[in-house]
Amino acid sequence: MAEAKGAYAQQQRVQHFFDVEGLESYDSSARVALTRFAIDHRAQVASAIFLVRSRLVAIGVSTAALAARLVGLEFVVLSARVEFDRRLRRASVT
Image (cartoon, rainbow, N blue to C red; front, side, top):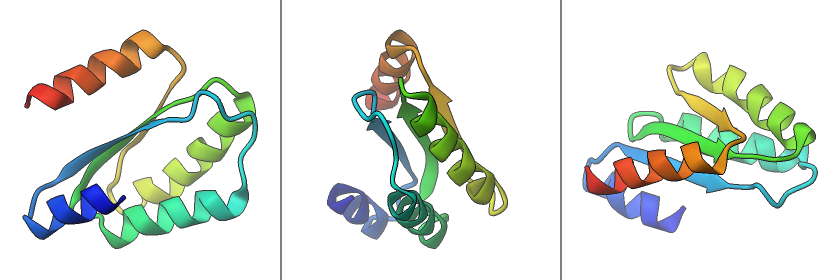
């Protein structure tokens, strides 16, 4: 998140990518912290894209997405690495 804060200081909207494919479960305090960070920086966060494999992690991110959506943020949950990588490449060139 430190890199994001540098971009935020430059008034850039940042698209975040989280490869959490290796996680098998989630901690609700981590979900709350991530949601709080995104909401606190909503003017600078364009979206957050998550690559997940675990159904539990997908549920946790989807729950965070509900709260984020209330303030106009988009959290996207993907289960296909190909789609995640395609979006990451596309974001890297813009």
